[in-house]
Image 1: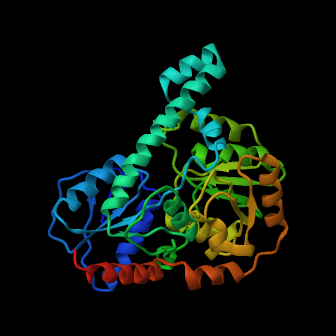
Image 2: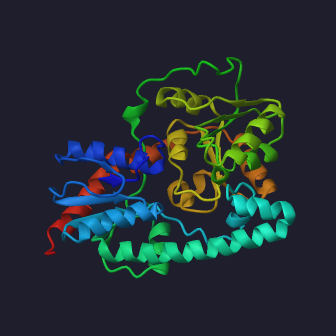
Amino acid sequence: MLNREDALSRPGGDTVQMLGTAKYLQRLGYQVDFHFGPPPFSLDYDLFHVFNLQTIETTLKQVNFIAQRKKRVALSSIWFDFNFDKRNWRHTFKYTQNKIVQLCSKISPGMGWQIYHVGKIFQNLDFSRKAQEVISKVDLILPNSFFELETISHYFKVNCECAVIPNGIDPEEFAEISVPANFPSSLEDFVLEVGTISPGKNQLKLLEAIPPEIPLVFCGPIYLGIDSRHSQTFLEAIQNRENTYYLGELSQAQLAFLYQKAKVHALPSTRETPGLVNLEAAFFGANIATTIIGSAREYFGELAEYCDPYDTKSIQKAVLRAFEKPKTEKLKKRIAENFTWEIAALRTSEAYQKILKKKK
């Protein structure tokens, strides 16, 4: 299994998916090893599983290195078309770290936006070219939803096997439960958002949307060198709102406690596929309010509330609907029966075997 260089030091959904799938593939009898970053790496394997089309520079180097040796390659694409909604560009523009764009924005916001916009167009053209090259050289694509598969098929020429492998949770990771040291003991019926503090997770919009009488709890890492302008704005915003708590980065045992206690887990992201923390929170019985952009509806159906992440009123309505509903076991049952890493590993194994039986 191959992933980006910082997959362990800056873990994300791709890290969780990789490690969760590997754990249960090993229980099926597979030998699974890991490599992080570009080549070189050992080629003494029957199959290579590459993660994350979004980290295109590393992914392309990995796939080229393998394909030149005529080895089997599977790709967990973990991809979303960022051109799907140009509002995403507007959203992230506010927090760009590009020094030229920042300087031009001080002279004229319109000038800054135009430079950012043109840069994005060229960046996306370059990405599309490289992504097509990756897809042309893999033997198997493993998107995590039919939404993702349809998007990839729309934008790229796909001439290989495809198998939808839904994301999951690992109940064993939550065998222990512990209370975060900084959790207010009197806190009840709160809205929780778990995730990296970043523009994509949209914490600032959630802060703006929810009435101050409803407690808000945030937890997740802050990477001050990345999205630092957004992170600073977030830290200032929580200080200026009552009933608001930022608990930092927590262990799985501490997250299990929060998931159990929360009335709602809100994830109004600018896109989700579908949000692993949503799956975890739902497994522990929290009501879900999440984004319409991405594959969340494929996973949660009518058992969650949905919002437009760029519309403050839409976020407010979705969260309040979820907050007013009683908690039930229906969504937990749906997650347990359909979305675990054990199930994902079984389906991944079936897809592996199909391409391993074919002649290269």
